[in-house]
Image (cartoon, one colour):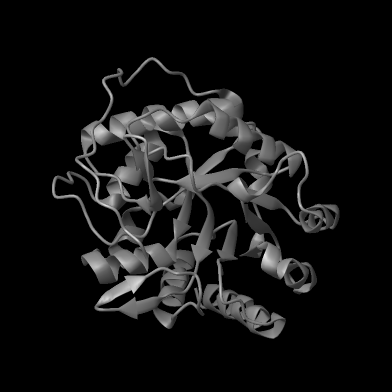
Amino acid sequence: MAERRFGRWLPSGRPAGGHKRHAAGAGQNAGRSAGLGVGIGWRPEIDLTVERLPGVGFVEVIAENVDPARPPESLTVLRAAGVPVVPHGVGLGVGGADRPDPARLARLAACAEALDAPLVSEHVAFVRAGGVEAGHLLPVPRTREALSVIVENVREAQDALPVPLALENVAALFGWPDDELTEARFLGELVERTGVRLLVDVANLYTNQVNLGLDARRALDALPLEAVAYVHVAGGHAHDGLWHDTHTASPPAEVLDLLTELCGRVTPPGVLLEWDDAYPGDGVLAGELGRIREAMSRA
């Protein structure tokens, strides 16, 4: 997992207020993500597998890999079968100092419309600084100053999108020394100030517990779980004392236990398995969806 060093994160000098969130971004189609069920990340390498897996409630597609003018045929087939498709962005960078790129926002909005998506999702992360791409979803400094900048970025993104936006907590290999807020408090205030929804990744909570010593269950206690749009589950591997969230293996029992803990606190509209490489066969993926359902039922 490659990392690059950046200089200190610097917020822009723009004021923290004066930007009104568009009502449609918060409310239009807001109820359509209710009851998504158990889903899987759609990837071209497993398109036919996803189509024939039994009981798939919804799928998620990396937005940057979709041409809104020509969506993949498999996604069209799934939509025709009534399976919701959620575009999942990885390059918007709402956690950076710069405002969201209008072209990236326009593409994300076009994906949502082309796929008749109930919502779109992105990350509370920054991905570039000073024109340099990180190639990774980097954690934001959890300071009041950074929060004010991110609030404005999120509001601008909401204005540009035709459906609600959900933001995901990220996995981290490092933390910032000047953090003023816990991740749960930071996300809670972001939700309160913008109305944005949450994509809670329990695998990322586990990653941060292993790598940074952040108690995942305590985070679940403090997160505004009533704002959850859906949940991510994924596997990874340990290396030199760190957990790498690679999405290339079966979710460990510890991650599924966190899913059970979350479901004991709230009923999430949907839970989705991420698998991004070293793809197993149909039977294995079907079994992993079964493990997710079983972990949910334990709550």
